[in-house]
Image (cartoon, rainbow, N blue to C red; front, side):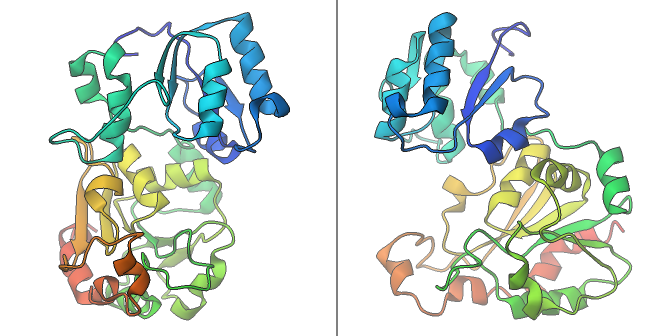
Length: 310
């Protein structure tokens, strides 16, 4: 919109869950939910709806952010004057461009001015504070804690997780006058049992918040303490201060995106074997030392300037 004006119409093909996240973004006109990604285009009612829409009103520009044969086939059938992204545009890491967001921005480079790309950052719009504060009886100032991640229910080592005992210790160390909002996705509640019982200053919202509510809750927080997982990216996109526990993941490539509008504090042991995510080093690791060696005292010391604001 910075370059093409407020009259531009933007449609997006999204996972149904992502559609809920984007429903408050007034920059988007139509969201096409796509639940079954791998169904061939000609056999997918969802994909053919998009194709028929484009044939009726061809797009000026299509950008395919996905990178697999199923989306390549869909992109080829959608009617558009200009097509970027897979399989039309090849991208590679450039000097100073290490994050996935920078790679995505490269896809738009042929049609965007560099000054516009430089200013482009992820942005999300959650439910208004008036709505979430009343719905969940939230105080005006609080911290958000996010101990779990999408691998919490797997019967394998959760390499991105900080030990539950460490979370339990940290809860005891944070001053009791500071409200702490505990969050987690639906289905992750069992992960929190070893951390309980919670101190009286904990507000338990685990598994209770739709994503748009969660965005609003994170946006109003003084800060969030999280592992390298979804809520860290949500916080980055709403400008909330982030304390992110980093172990095996390459934070500079896949962690929360650093922008002029946010403050991100990476808490890491910076071990020689890190990052190792999805490598043989990680698969052969049985102790997850890069996360275990981060102590509650280290976390508390890093967060102290923020805690002092309460």
